[in-house]
Amino acid sequence: MNRCDFSYEKKLWKKYKVVAGVDEVGRGCFAGPVVAGCVVFPRDTKYKIPDTISIDDSKKLRPRERETSARWIKKNALAYGIGEASTALINRKGIKKASEVAFRKAIKAVNLKLHFVLIDAFYIPYVKGLRRKNQKAIINGDEKSISIAAASIIAKVYRDKLMTHLSKESKYKNYGWGRNKGYGTREHQGAIKKYGITRYHRKQFVETYLGNH
Image (cartoon, rainbow, N blue to C red; front, side):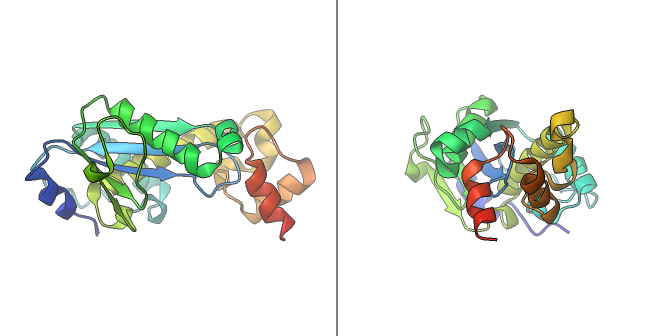
């Protein structure tokens, strides 16, 4: 059951030709990059989303649902892009600035001139051609706008595959990233205490959290 719809997009399509949804995933992780997605659906889209496709906040979907939905999104979107900000950048600049970098990369990767963007919760500074008046930050936007939810889904599928791939390297296999995707699960916390942190760990996140527990 899709709770998201095109309500926000339909209002904007009356004035703007190219409207994108943007969202990020991995913001609260202990390890790995923060990844943003950007999705543009055709203007005044008429198609009905099949019952087999779930478009909602990516965290609420099962892995198989996300992967199926991601394939459908990429096939039916006018354009999409993914942007990544590394752990090194997070450690150097902080998660807020790193997330903004990921957002801007995702928007650039779309390779279309965007007229308006819908974002989950945050405005994005310093986006060429997209001032604040051409952005709308929606609280829990990934539960309301199909474009934002779709961006969340493609970003989540990308990031999960990345973390699973990293988990197969011998020096990282003890952290369980294939299962926890870098989030601070009990298993992950235990591994950090036993084996220490890696180049993919967010030092401030880990030190702050484990220092209080």
